[in-house]
Length: 435
Image (tube, rainbow, N blue to C red; front, side, top):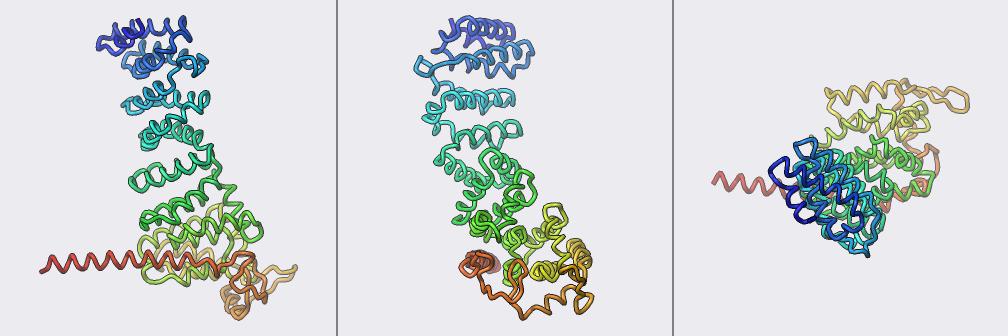
């Protein structure tokens, strides 16, 4: 009887569908656990009807779906977890959003109630769940992320999720552009932001596709600097020079952030490692300062005016103490075209820097009205990241040994070689066409 009703629920005739789904509804209410062997077939009939064009059918289908899902079952009692997962996975390809959402609710319910059994079929549904991240519906994407986060509670599955996610971003750049921020921010909420960023950094550090790695790091950096969900991570990074956990996180991100000069500079400004920011800025060569770099620099200058960098702007009240910060900002100013709006914004900000320092209650005026003169005044002294003068710190700045962090120069060298190789290929192609 159940098999016949399931078949009739897909009939073209509205009255037949309504009659079939109504009978199924009564069967579910009366039969309960006696319908275990038919759960998958019944679900396969209900889910499409949830998006039926007729409201009466949709109402009965939703009622039946809720009744079916509310029944507590034991997988050992002929309950086919694999069969239900197969139906739910197939319905994720439905053209109707409501059906896809209910299919995800079923996968989530099964994960919560029968986690071990669901993980046995993980290989059957994992690829489909990853593809669902490209869904046009935000609600569908958020539900998929909730399921992924539930699966990723195990370290092995967490690593697998992040690896597959990076892979999907690599083969579908539009996914990164459209959904990247939503996906990363949601995973940071569900799985701990530091854990997510550390894993992403580890993967991107060894990324073979250098162009993709650069784009991905820039996206992660922008999310780090702007998302409210990552405020605790930003606070931890701000303590990189005084906190062991902050330092460890900074070093962890540094390795992959080297793919993008602007990302490294942003990270250094956030972590208050201003002296190293200066070193990075001064190490930039002609190949680094291209249109893409200037676009990223423009974004950074505007971010410096947001509440996230309020601490940095307040530090400018103590130009004698934050010499390297001033030097870094003036360095960025020198890289910007003078007619650009970013140049004007940063120049106006630097003009507000006082020509004196509030030191021990006494006002100490600089040698001239220009605060940059203080940098020249102390250029012969060793200044640590926190502004202490005449301390012989060499390359060891508050516990971070930048002498050993050669990844930036090495990574940029790889990017330069790739750019030169492409330029040579283009020139060879052009010469061949002329001949």
